[in-house]
Image (cartoon, rainbow, N blue to C red; front, side, top):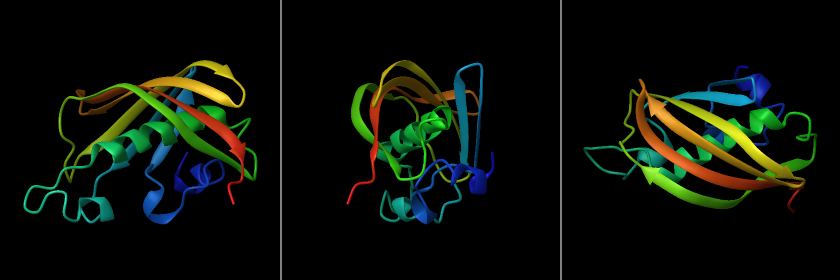
Length: 140
């Protein structure tokens, strides 16, 4: 899927849509994002040595996992984080890197979904985490 197709599943737009492409195969979601260097989250984090914040990397994981949720991500539904567990940041992600997120849904009890995932850059492990989210009605 390209960004236009991803936007049919996710409500994220502009600066907060953190996937350039995504897909799934055999129950595993794969999302990719190329860090250009001009993103809002790199401004001031850190001057002269920009590093993608961990919270942004966790958001990339969650957005990637939502690709597996196409059937329940109907219009008006929002995926919202409900938890992050066992998060490990192992290597920094910098401008010029292409992030690859791989996620699996471990279990589900609608509207809650429990997942695990990793982020790598050129096969270098950068992040591993377990996380959960709920698919809810639109938040007003």
